[in-house]
Amino acid sequence: MSGLIGRKIGMTSIFDENGKNIPCTVIECGPCVVTQVRTNEVDGYSAIQLGFDDKAEKRSIKAELGHFKKAGTAAKKKVVEFKGFEEEYKLGDVIAVDLFTEGEFVDVVGVSKGKGFQGVVKRHGFGGVGQATHGQHNRLRAPGSVGASSYPSRVFKGMRMAGRTGGENVTVQNLRVLKVVGEKNLLVVKGCVPGHKNSYVIIQK
Image (cartoon, rainbow, N blue to C red; front, side, top):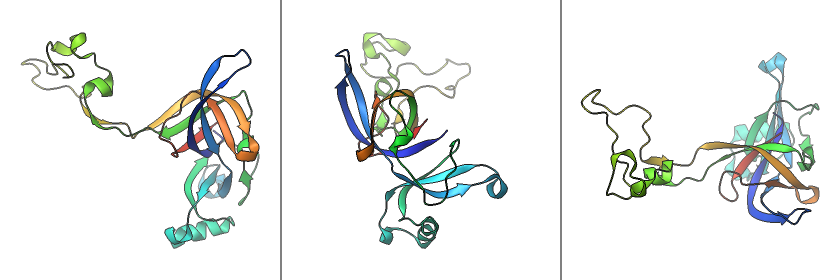
């Protein structure tokens, strides 16, 4: 899938032509620099590597500086490979937000907010004592029964229990592009995307 790297700015809402209030997310999308071109002859597959968001030279190792110097650009904080671009790009080319058009649908990939160690009500949506699920009857947010009696005398793998929540790669599919603001490199998509404000996201066509 072709696409770009961006940064989640935050959420807002806009009104459509019918006066309906639509929740949407604003993403700073690009500009991204082509930092490497993968070819079938050399690498065994075709793809282009894009870099986004300049990084201070003193925070970069020499291998990074040499890699980005070939493309004639500063070191980048975020680097991602994309396949499926229809046009051919070469080192140093800049791809902007006008890659997307209003009305089309995109997929957005990001890392969800980390919430630390959480119980089953927050992590899996268990009903708590109100619905008395999993054998519990008087404890508000406890998981209830998890075992399987004397046979097989163990807890099955995959049992939904308390644990670390969030901080995982999440893909939200088919978000409609509401606006493309080329002069400010902004992309406005309908709905929400994973991650906290200022986190990196990948927008795929």
